[in-house]
Length: 259
Image (cartoon, rainbow, N blue to C red; front, side, top):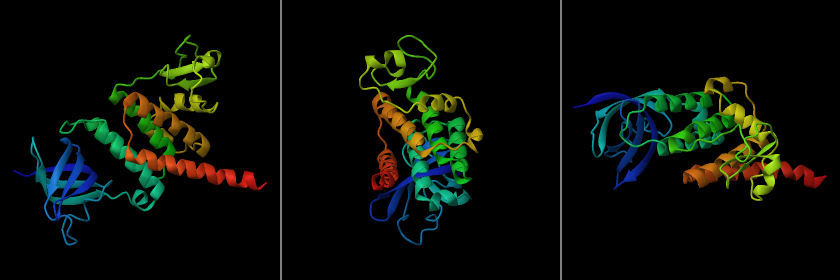
């Protein structure tokens, strides 16, 4: 029996000669994989709807076990700004992969769905991509069982900075204890105060929050390290965004070398 439901397209994957598997994050059923016969053919009626990072209203057969099937789709949000901007698309793809990794398939999670939907909406509406990306990283850490204290030194409990982050101690070190970890991340002085603010903010407050590019790269480096070491995941889009950051850093250095 067919059901009507709402979902965001996470990705599609070729299957056999002309078919495809499409993964959706649905509001009603959580993340699920759908089989779409003939989707790789140019004339398939659902081809224009099953574009990753679009929100659609679907009609299809949803099975508790195994693959489900789609029959109809109607676009709710195409997110044109994301689709045409490679940088926004990279951030949105990273958030999509992180959302997918943070939840089990076939588990309804309306709050996570709404968080994902709002994240894409804010990116599309021009909210600073760096801020949206970073708050998603921070909020989703708890779903992987990682709860970090962004207010106190792990050694003495001091709440007064400057601070740095230590992977060895899995948290902050105040300046008095930096010598206890020679491999601390050596973040910029402004990074920890900013992440302390971001960790308590809602997405809707980021409309006018502009983060200096160099500082955003520093915070992404911190969160990438945390996800790699403490969570144990490395997403494909992580490498792409890191390459973009490295390229931007190199471009910034060119005028200095030419002086």
